[in-house]
Amino acid sequence: MTPPIDAHVRLDTHPTHPSAVTAVLTGSQARITLIALEAADWAVLAANVLVLARIDHEEPYWAQDAAKHLTVGAITVEITPRLQEAIDEEWNWANYPMPWYTRSEIREVSNEAQKIHDDIRHGQLLIHAQALLAFEKVHAAEMRPGPAPMTDTERAAVEARAVFDLTAAKPEPSSPEPETVPVYLADAGDHDALLDAFLDAHGDWERWRTWSDETTYAIHESQTLRIERVHETSAHETSWTIAAYETPVSDRMWVLTATGAIPAPVLEELLNHLADGEGWDTVIGAPADEKMVTAATQPLSEAGWKHTVDGRRIRWTSPAGDAGIQFDAFTTQHPSQNLATWTVWAGADPDRPAWTLTASAHTPSSLLADLSENLVHGTGTRSAQAGGRELRKKCAVTSPTAQTVMGSLAVSRRH
Image (cartoon, rainbow, N blue to C red; front, side, top):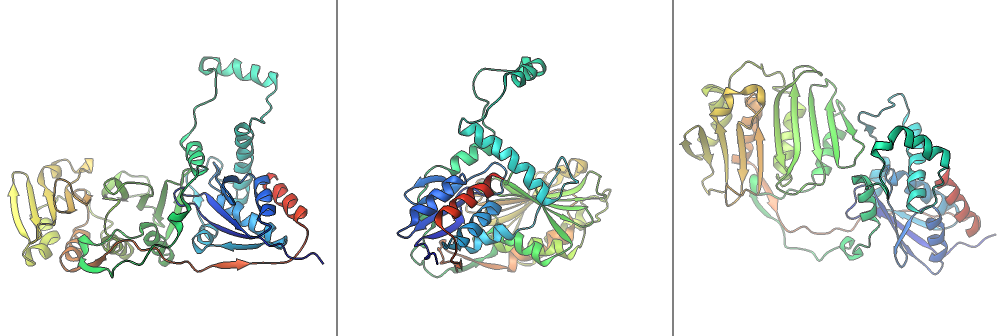
């Protein structure tokens, strides 16, 4: 009987690249695992540290495939909960050019493209002279000497294969207890986790993804309400866009946007309001009149927020001056353009806010009133981000030789 191999692999999501996967090896026979993963196109970052970065964004799938082959070879594999979440995630490609393909068939096609990319990257792609001549006949005007410029996806994969600081993934010292603050001053929290929880709780919404991991879409089954979540944005860039449509193919009725630093409890309340389904069918011709503005801001007035008028703009400011809502009457004259009629902000300086939320003229007054109510009475927590220890999922099986492990893993990756 072949004795177990003294090697342990910890598979985790990459600390900065959305879909890449890292492998940290330990044990006296870790070298065996390193050779096996290298044969499957995992890149070595440092001593016993590897990364799998692909242009087809299928790293979690191939990481799971690697884990299966390694465990069959008597190597202990640990998959972190967040990587397991990525492995289990169900999603569809938005606007896929061959929509009749199944998920597994799409993966086969993308893997063939990945192999061509890898051959180019390693200088192993063989192109026959006849093929070059045929290509030149069709594309002679666009042909240039030298390598083609990298796409954003290729550049991201290169960056993921760069050396990173492993200590960033280690738990940090515990921080002070979080303080309770008005909801508009709360921490942004984990927006992706909020979206995941929202979709898990509401089966009438479906997740869609584009060819890039940068954006996720959530679309209601009616096809008339859609959420766009851009993942890698700064605190002051638009990270969320919510839009309602009269029909699945019509123009937008209204649109709402929020920057990346919007507090988690504000975002959560907004998503909950969308789940209630109230106010989607706002009549396009209905003007944002005085009655609508009063209804949307009544919670602010009742709470004593300062009310000022500056030309076309009306503003309500919190007693502490650290948050406000502004209504721009001018934009209601051009409702079809979906201009920012409402602006919500928080921070010490309204001209340089910590976060902002904007909404167009036909955004339902019920949604705006709910938002106002939350700003006045809601609370949240604010604290330094504290690292936490993850629960671990382990799988270990004793079986064939190390040579079998390396061979089967490489064959699985290539075919």
